[in-house]
Amino acid sequence: MEELLNNNKTFRDININNINIEKYKILHINKLISGKNKYFRTLSILGKLICILILFLTIYFMRNKIYHINKIGFKKFFKSNLVINEEENYSIKAIYKVDETKEKIKLIGNAYLKYIDEMFINDKKITPVEYYKFKSPGNYIIYILIDISSLDSILSMFNQVYNMISISFTKKFDTKNIKNMNNLFYLCLSLTSIDLIYFNTEKVETMSCMFKNCVNLISINLKNFNTQNLEDAQGMFSGCHVLTSLNVSNFNTKKLKNMNSMFEDCFLLTSLDVSNFDTKSIYTISSNLKVARI
Image: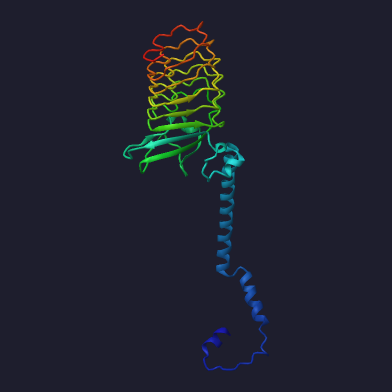
């Protein structure tokens, strides 16, 4: 009927009041839902496949997200796409100075990458890497969220990180189980300041060369350092050329055995209070104040 009307161009006025079209409607609907329509059957199968695929992807997505929530915490999960520039959201904040962009810059020791949950450069989230190639010179803030609670050593974590000019740690950098801090900042040639106020060092046994050859280091806050179990401090501050003052009056040295070259080549260090040092257990102390102007 539709074809008839469409093809006839001479009709001007048509009266269809007496035509019963109900049977045509019924026939049309019955044909559509009877399954005889190949397009309907195809759409139905395709729809089922799409639903199954969506269900599978939803389960997979939620499974991974639930694992991620459990790993980094519910609150952190919902902030994972934001810049982590508040202390509650990162463990380490460091500033790196980039002069040349030809070479990759070392950010952190390779051994610790697997413990990093997130790493940001300014407001850009990146995959945790040991070395990074910056596109242009300048100062860059690096935020790192890392879980070291299962470790007993952070040996050489920032060893030979030449471009780092400052670093601070939050309470999330949990050092309560750490026993070894050897070479932690060894040869950080550009480092000028370190904030270790949240460091828990009560179990640390060795800090050998911890700050050695930090030639531009101006100050170190050791106020909260607990050295009750410290045995080895060899070369701990050796080569800190511009360090002018150092407060170690709170150091507990009852278990200290080796403080050889501990303050060697601290050229500008003019005063040092070691009156509380208990040296009964120390077996080597040679070259300790060599070149230091004390």
